[in-house]
Length: 169
Image (cartoon, rainbow, N blue to C red; front, side, top):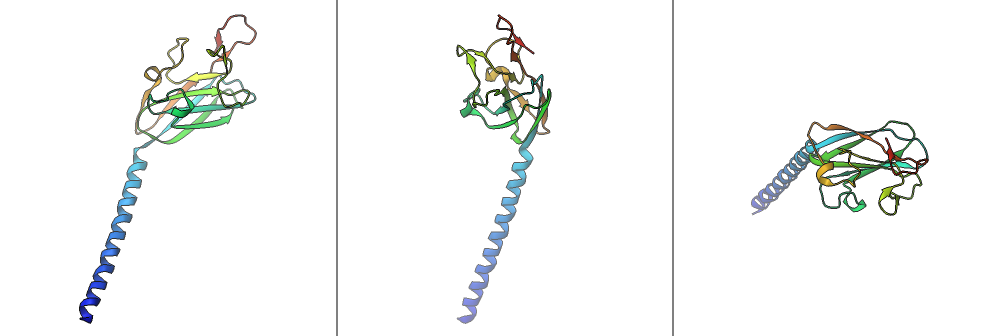
C-alpha cells in the first residue's frame, strides 16, 4: 500500500506541475495576444498657443459617453509649452476611435463655454469636419489599424479681440 500511496503523491505532483505549466503558458499566450491586439496612436496637436494650463487629450472607443469625461477610454494631460505638441497613446484597442483635445487654460478640469455653447478655451477635434458644431461620434471616429496611426489635430482658439465669435486656427 505504501507504493500505491507514493505513486498517487507523485501523480498529483506531476498533475500540479503540468497544470501550473499550462496555466503559465496560457497566461503568457493570452498576454501576448492582448499586446498584439493593441495599437499605438500618435496625436500631433498643431496651432497650440503655449501658455498656462495643460492640454487635455481624450481618446474614445465608442459612442457611449462620447465627448463626456465619463466616456473617455484613456486620456493624457501634457504641458502646452510649444506650438506643436506630440502625444503617444500605447496599446489602444484596434477599431474605431475618436480623439478630442482641449487647452484647459485656467486648469479647472473642464472646457469652459460662453452661454454653455461656444468654447472660451482652445480645442481640437480629430477628423474635423470644418462645421461650427459640437463633435459627434459618427463624424469624429476613424478606424485605428493594428499597425497604429498618426492623427494631426489643429487647435482652435477663440479670438479674444474680435466682436464676432469666429475661432482662429
